[in-house]
Image (cartoon, rainbow, N blue to C red; front, top):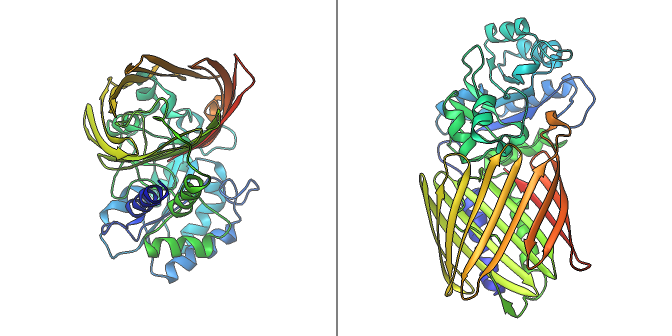
Length: 431
């Protein structure tokens, strides 16, 4: 079991970190404000911006805009500066510095906040465009796009009064539905830390850090990124502790998941003496999945899914033998799916029927019927921050309830059984 776990983790690490021959040299730096106080990406001194540009230029990097990233072949090393939200400090502080250095950048304003206090005006954006900058969209209201039903999703990703080349997904959150909607209005879409190499609608945007002066050039030059420590953490969690005796399948598990997945996801859960670890990694139409249970129940396996929209097919192998799955997309509202594993079959669904409401359900058909389900709703609190506070209610051999707090692309959930004293925790990061 441990050898299988180690092999699967190393397989995932290899799949994630192999550089793309076309774009191994690209480097994106994502910021929000310049010359302000507010953290690593929310505020950075102008002199730090100047120093990083000069350092990258000395290492042979050519500065381009977001939509130009895919037009430069290997071995040309490109760098792109991305400023999200459209704060006025970009015009007042960053623009003079970069104009002096002859560097163009891309700014992604929240369209409904253009001209509002603290944000750039349309005249300032027009001046940046005239200077060679690229103006994109950060959606109309900065909503978390993966929480929206199709009609609201299309509205958020509308081009506005002027056609814009690229969209930056708020909180780095996107899925197949979001990418399809983005294609209707934009030529590219910018995501989070990892992205998908060579894919116009999942461009990476590595997380900024205090060590960017040396870390980002090192990462880009080696063709690696922050997936390495993420996967090392995954491997440590999988190998920690002895496997249990009872073979089981991960709950609410769709091996053919694709419609509601972005570029990848890592989740760790603890409930009822069972540690549940899951990893999804997408490359184009392919999806690699790893699943591990440890503790009172045990399972380990890997699946490979291929999307033939609207159908996704999956095959894999684990400690209970071969596994097969199929999923069918439901026109932007989610997907229904089926799974077969070691004589046991199950059907399920994951749906977004209304904005900010997500439903999951699974029914095991054989050898004995069993029902699981969970509903999660984002409360109308802090809408400009993607409604980060959520409540959930679920059923899995008994009712449980809890809440979720999402910070950017990361979330943490705490649940409690209603029939006995038992707590569960889940943490997840999306990209």
